Length: 319
Image 1 (spheres, rainbow, N blue to C red):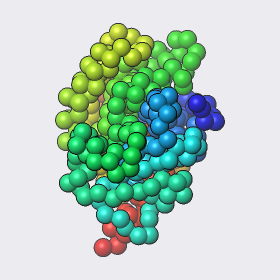
Image 2: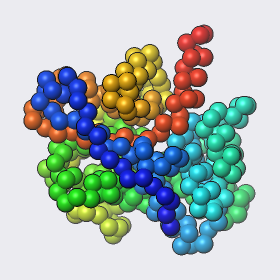
Image 3: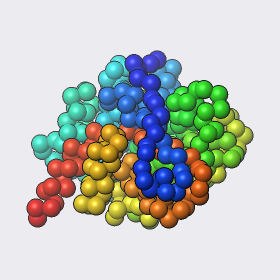
């Protein structure tokens, strides 16, 4: 089972901030691998979709918010691979649909809106049973692909992007944005012991993710699923760059994103990568990484949400 992907590549970023700190800065461009299923989305979906195919499911059901990259990518991948998809969306329907949900519908996804109270039960057996009674035999993928299949796919991000032996080890730090922490868990499992992952939660008070990450790592290692190493590499959360919380944007972040794009030709998404890139630049100015180090910043895609976010921000700004 495959989609036609373009190979990711590593792009060096030349900035005065990195030069002053004697740091080599690179971006892993996962955002370019596919127009719809890009970034870390394919890696989190890959083994979920394989399992669904192997078990002869024809319907996929998953969860997300109104601007969810996961909903967008699942709708596209499901359509391309012959699945009927159902998206359980947090909150009430708002017409006209925003670009994310409009695209999902165009890809054949059936949207089901639930209250925020019901949405909080999205990982419970009771809600899953209710959904199966309503929609029949569905293969349920958790929000963000946050399960062991998703982690397994993310263990392959570095090796697939940089297959040349030893090349991945050239980086001292792997930096990435963090939502459900699935990607961080997978990358941590694929790191050499001399490397470290630095993750930037996009949720306010993101420190709660530490326990969830440890649980993901423990469960994955106990599952017997393949992993490059017998234990994960070290990782750390930087919780001060959420800009107010999930999907929160302000003028400072918008300005940073636009200036970064103009300087380096790399478009950042406001929900995830812009906050991570901003945080890395701030930490570089503080000398956090030390001199002579090499950093790899993982661009996890998600650019589809920028149009909706920009319209939303402009509307708020006029109030």
